[in-house]
Length: 289
Image (cartoon, rainbow, N blue to C red; front, side, top):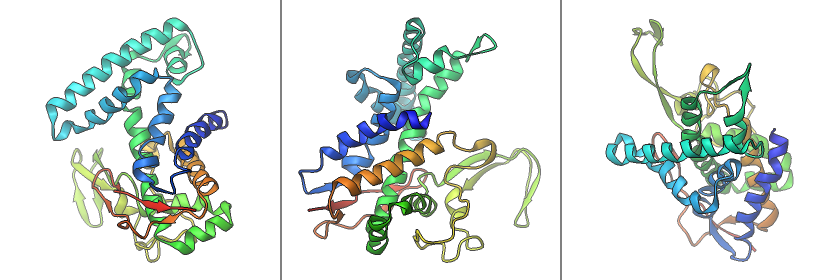
């Protein structure tokens, strides 16, 4: 399935990077990272072009529910109505050329996926697949371009890109923590935690555990590869992790292929990574020649 999606994603990334080539300068967060995951998801869902800006806005707005409840709920309801209509439309077409049609018409033992399951999946797709890739890629770019010797090593050996992506996601996980409820009494680091306790699991701290990684706060694409937790683990592991890795690797290859000698712009402020739940670079200003 990933191999089949590669040409589709390549068209998205070529369109975006191609639009930068003649400029000589860009902010790789605002001009690229913030756009390619969402445009790819819109293409994957085969959304009408005129609907895409509104769909993206509603998907982003629904995440505001914790601090702007009224607008967050309004966005979620509007997105739900839009998706409901889209699922009905795609079922009537009986197509198998886009992601919505494939899942809306899929059957197991003669039964379709329940509508609420479909709706919940599509409602979160932009955030789960878009925000995470966007923030993760911005952190990888910030780390790489702030480490000239490491970006030069990648220019010389593109085989290093895969481990650079893994190290970037360890060092700068786009999601720093998850809320969970304990299923049983447990003792963690000599601290008793009763069953049904609300806890916050800090993925970012686990990814920088000094007992696992020497000098854990250092970004180092050459360090020994070990399993980190940017995509979660076990029953809660991210089902889109392989697609995300493919996107990030292809996007970084496209940058190095099409923007000659791309490097940090010395006339602009250096990247700053910020944020709590979603964590990403504010900007990565670069130039090329």
